[in-house]
Length: 170
Image (cartoon, rainbow, N blue to C red; front, side, top):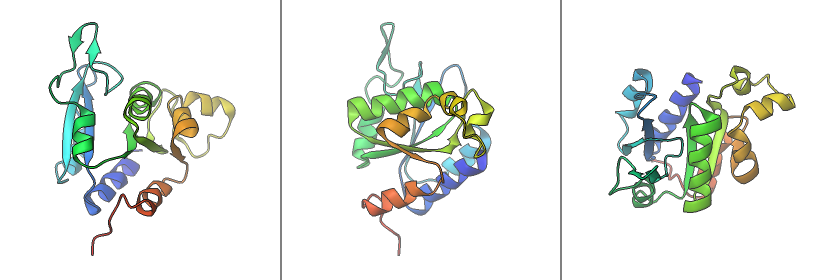
């Protein structure tokens, strides 16, 4: 999974794509192997969050850690209308954030089973094709029904290129 996430960051660097990172209070910072690559990207920002959903504003009356500036604000400023998700805790953090992005903020959501970790280690394996593995993927089902789930880990780039979201550098 780490190598696939590095590939995605490489594409972001090559095409000057904005990268938004969510970090939670209780799971810590982005791992150093990815943070080194992220620091090389020209358009990145990090938002803290208290709960699974990165777009959630309140938790039991407590304001979002960035209470004056929200992820959707930054994404809109960057001209983003489609999001490619990667991360851990796919059946909670990724799923909840993607659901809000699509439902409340009208972003197209996309991911690959190779860049999302779930509670079931087999869920991210290309060899996992049974219904129980699909259910274990949790958050990936959202992308199947309401977004784009790439099982080849390549069409996301094709999708963004076809729809004019990536301008090829000359």
